Length: 72
Picture 1 (cartoon, rainbow, N blue to C red):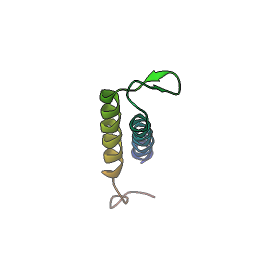
Picture 2 (cartoon, rainbow, N blue to C red):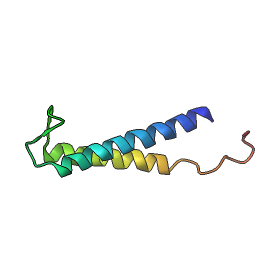
Picture 3 (spheres, one colour):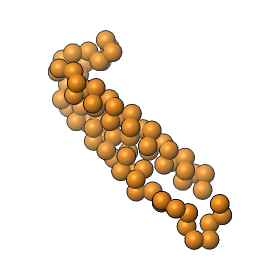
């Protein structure tokens, strides 16, 4: 129960964070520095977008309601 909820929250937060990083990478031109520290390139942007999509898909694939017989 708590483990399932925690893993869903982790998937949601992690997936959303990676999507935000991917969108930031798309907003900048290739070779620019993100936050003045990290260089932006296409491979990183694609990887972050894919990781974000997988995280959000894992969150969405979780149970929407408690199983029959499960305690609330």
